Length: 162
Image (cartoon, rainbow, N blue to C red):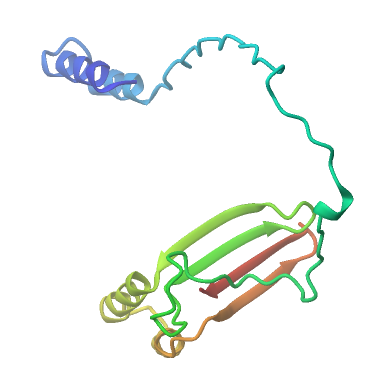
């Protein structure tokens, strides 16, 4: 439902034409699915594509000597930060097919700020746990904080600093 349709419903409510319950049901109903226009297939010319013989020495396949790791260099590629982590990453991965079901990336600064605010404002928060987490964040070291494997659902949860 677009903004114009919502505005019309609210105008009808303001004019007294419909009740608040009717307006709520109209606003909560799902929007009808949009129809996608079919894409016309285009035939690409193949007569001008050069075909060269594939030489076996041109193919070089190397297998990594080390095990795959979750750690990667910083996205911007600079090492001026001394390897300090920039992100708190949370991944829930299906171990069968290796696809991520959940992928959350938060800036470290935002996590620190939220932790400070929560520890001051929330009386129910475990202050020792919050202080321990703050020490880990201030250590400026990349690595895995939590790794949990659920064998029943064949899922893995990773929380790490990158």
